Image 1 (cartoon, rainbow, N blue to C red):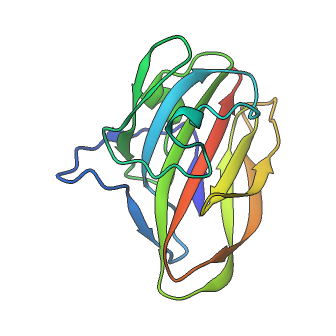
Image 2: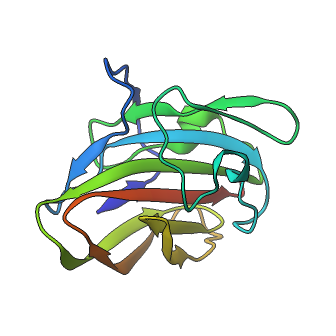
Length: 169
């Protein structure tokens, strides 16, 4: 399960810069590398094109991306004590912005499963191992959550998981 909502978060310092690894066990992912905000209204633009693109990104904590207006954004590790991570609070996302969240899902064997994502915003997409597995629709009423179940095929070992989130405040 994945969750990206408005809840308290903790910026975590890690002795290593590797991406967070979440063992697939039915629990929520509570640790992510996050990047943003990028100015934009939707999910069409690949803001990671300059570093290999969304399909190929495998960030490490501290990696940077330069935006079209010359700002340098840094992949930052966030850890939550509960099942929700607030990208808006962590990144200071402005109206009409896009952000990314990345982790690796570790599976002890290949199997069919699903990703359950809860998101409040203007749409989101989920990529697993570089392939887009689905999108979450825009949500106008910020007081309600969107829950979506997206079927996935997990390979044995680590599976790269990238969320792209559009916010319209």
